[in-house]
Amino acid sequence: MPATPRLTMRAGTDRCSVPETLSTGKRGLRRRSVPGMIRDCARFAGRCKCGGVRRTARWRVWYRGAMAARSHVLVLNNAIWPDVYRPFDHWRRWVPAEVAMTEVRLGRSLPPLAGFSHLILTGSEASIVEPDAWVAEQQAYVRAAAAAGLRILGSCHGHQLVAGAFGGRVGRAAVPELGWIEVEVLGDPLMFAGALRPVWTFAAHFDEVTALPPGFVATARSPHCAIHGFAHEKLPIWGIQPHPEIDVASGERLLADFTHLDPRVLGAAISRPPRDSGWIRQLVANFLEL
Image: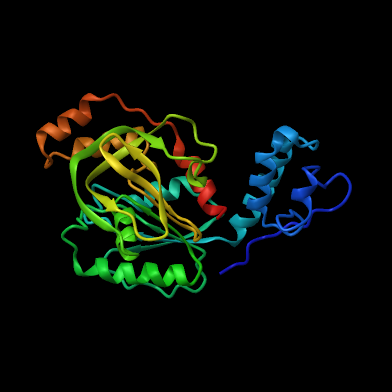
């Protein structure tokens, strides 16, 4: 996997004038990875003589360009009805064009992990509560990816699959969520850094994570789902229950195709006006920076 680009802080105009306890010592910026420097400079922008926000933006642009050239995202496309739901196309739209992406459709052999930096597991029409044989195979693959140091992001079904891979529990949702919902952010997780608040996004799930695996913390919730997002405390592993990759137009098309669903659930979803706060842009950028 490509090494994280690093930037050495130099004396003079390129050196950040944050408090000396941050520019030297155990938490020094001198050999920190760029994401760490971005977060530290932003956190102390109010006391930073260099103008932390301005310099943070410059570092972020440099870092994203460097990572784009080094990243290779593997997407496990778990759609069962690709004529209705095409998750790879949705994610491809938001990942920068210069970032390499490889799609593996359901039923295809999982490739060797060497050469990939990030792993995305998409949603699916399948249920984790009644898992097919391929779910266990993918969960073993996810554990191997984590051991290899890949950055991992699971969405909806993928979120539940990742939770199960590390010992979490998944069950039927007491109240299914379909359509546009508001997500409450818990704390200040990196996956929501820079996102507009409140966060509005598309959701479509009848199952949910009911218990987190050891070492994971919840990052978001809704009135009907206590674990709408999670992150590992130390490893770059994220899970999100909603579908921020689905924009308003795509969401309306999906709702129009969901004629097989419970009319009460579908009717309630259609009756609510679409609201999308655009979280997907920050989510993808933050994920690629892990």
